[in-house]
Image 1 (cartoon, helix red, strand yellow):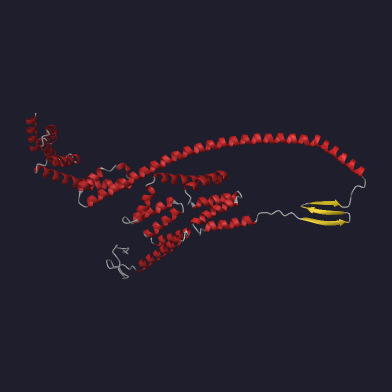
Image 2 (cartoon, one colour):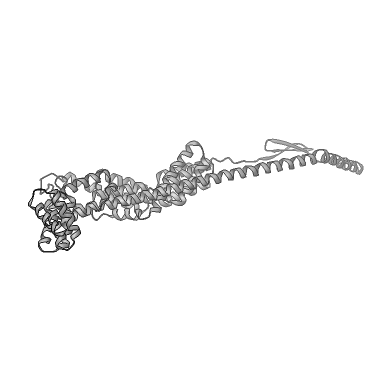
Length: 458
């Protein structure tokens, strides 16, 4: 534990040994923050993810630099399908603790798979599109979109919850319950999901049930009345024909009436019904063809959009990787400068593509380059001149050439560079640099010597 005032390591005393600050309350706050972290850890272990989020956020309210709580919060959010929020927590944690931080591993695991990053980006856009469909009342399209999202990211709890609400809206209670149970498999005490399940139970309990009552009522000795639904049927009892002739006549009349009814009423009605069914079938088939054609066009357009989004996401991931590499090289250059190795720092700075840096990175690059430049030029000249005196002309040419390239006002470096080329046997380059000495240092002894050597080489 370090002092909040001076950063010194604290002892058991209630006061800092370094600056004398009262750290009793500060120590108590850190203990409370760690207690909330332990509570969140216990809840996460039993898959009470929403409860763990509340405890961990409370821990971070008290101590925002509690990287253990922040890393665990990122893991819980990642398990709940909220990848962007998890990455945000890990990046903040990395800023607070540069070394030995598990956030580096988590970020690397996510970033090393550009296809997954692209899928995550697409999932977020599709979820927002689903919300837009819901606002517009296009519940079928919203359900289709959410199914696609959950096929890619099964742990997106808010996606399951929204899909369950849509199923409840369309009275599909079985599927709604399945989606809510999928949420509870991931987060066993999710308050919102439990509330939805309660509402679902209430909705299923209020479904109307048709009850048909049938009551037999004896009205007279010769008849019986029945109540079926809203109709009352009275049926006589004990009535029958006394003669066979009447029976035959009644049968004949019934047959004749039946034939007439079938000829004049039933057959035309059946023909009309078949024609109507055929027309309905043709219209339904036409509607299906048009619907499938429209769906095909929609899917093709969506596929093109997904393809563009995937290419954009891959490009963004590549650019992010380049920026991360550039910033790491910038940190290496700063470390070399801190270790009093300006030449190595300058070489690392030159290897960086400045355009890949952020605005803050560019400011740091320019500041470091100005600090390194003067020291590096001096170091390169001293190293090159020492190599020239030791007749190590390859090293002197490399260092003196770099020195003059960085600062073309270094006349001595230019002169000894020309001499190094001359003594190494490279007369062509020696002529070029002798000529530069003559032109850039007129009236000096170095220019006179360079002119004399140049004349001997002609």
